[in-house]
Image 1 (spheres, each protein chain N blue to C red):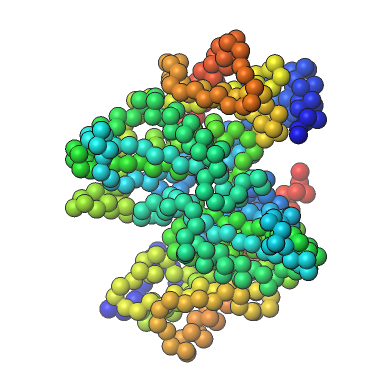
Image 2 (cartoon, one colour):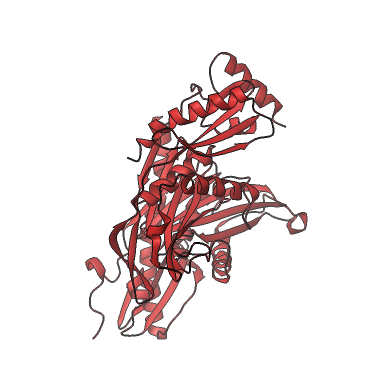
Amino acid sequence: MAYTERLNGRKFDETRKIEAKVGVIPNADGSAYFKIGNTAAYAAVYGPRNLHPRFLQDPSRGILRCNYNMMPFSSSSERVRPGSSRRSKEISLVTEKALLPVLDLNEYPNSVVDVFIELPETEAGSRCAGICAASMALADAGLVMKDLVAAVSVGKVDDKLVVDLDYSEESYEEGHVADIPIAMMPNYEKITLLQMDGLISKNDLKKVLEMGKKACKDIYEIQKNALKEKYADRGKE
Amino acid sequence: MYKDLREHILKLFNSDVRLDGRKFTDYREPFTVETNAVKTAEGSARVRIGKTEVIAGVKVEVMKPYPDTPNEGSIIVGVELLPLSNQNFELGPPSIEAIELARVVDRGIRESKCLDFKKLCIQEGEKVWTLIIDICPINDAGNLFDASALAAIAALKTMKFPKYGNDKIDYKTKTDGMLELKDIPISVTVTKIGDKLIVDADSDEEKAIDARLTVASLSDGTLCALQKGGDYPLTYDDIAKMVDIGVEKAKDIRKLIT
């Protein structure tokens, strides 16, 4: 049987419910919370600050360092062992590459901008939620940025092209699944993260990336509003 | 290192005021407990004390019991001092601070005997429930000890066991089975700076401490765990006063989760 209906009557090009907030971690230089469906991400930015050990320093520009981590209780199955894994290291790396294009770190030689992404609860789409939160946190930290970065997963479940796969879709067993997390600079329409697991035709990939573009632009509006909201509140105080 | 800060704090203390205007035995506001804060955990709680925020989550596993207690389950407490929550925390294996904090939270619960470990037995000598309580600070603005202990006991109090059968845990299906807690142990950390005793030290006050005493107590005032910290000694008189303050404040805090 073909895939005909998504959970909770969601349309095929519709994301799960999104909640976004900035300034949630007072200790950090910039911070944000981004929740999509049952996947939640915190991001905290510390820096630009001194980079130790010194051999890591780059005298021509600052460097960006991202760390993605799932809290031990963030999976609905077994407990996640604390500490980094091969998976979390790879996600940290691609997150860094997804965010770097919007930053200008030339002004901060020998320094580091640290981005810590923590997931208290997850149900599919955690790297994209982390990237959305991180880009808002970088903006909240007041860093010079060309654009924000919005991220979402797109893909194909059986015969349907979909946006923002949930757990039941990622693990759909009655047909092929392609899971394609993407991140985009919404104002430039450029892709900064692209990965894929699964099978899809060239044509469908083109189509589904277009669907992702629209979703990223919608997410961008939500991110922008969250940033504006913080400063609107400032005015009232 | 924080000599000026300490002198400033002590000067204010002489006029019975703290840096943020609080009285010596006041906790910061807002002081809140939100249970079921994390849907993926079997039990969870988010505690906020002023700008300090921690999340505790319980996951359960079925394990073979320890050979010396074949009919008892167990608890494990872990603390991750996330670098997200404080600029001084670093990635990597748990620091000594994280280990002390986890062990103090663990003892506050374990030694209170509020949990009957025998009730966590599924099959003697073979299978017992292990409750793993993980604590993650989101923002460390001081007093992680009290916030973590409170989050841990609130998470335990609201946890629901998942379905278990055929040697497998079905995490997706939660049952109505909850833990039976005979009491609610509450930890209060009393801090000594100069000759003054305060509760709920914030991060500035923590930099200036002489000593601290974490007092865990039951609802009838019985003490169940203690931990002294800090580089300076306490007098017998200090200890008596700190224990009194700890037990007294615990009564107010217990109301937040009962």
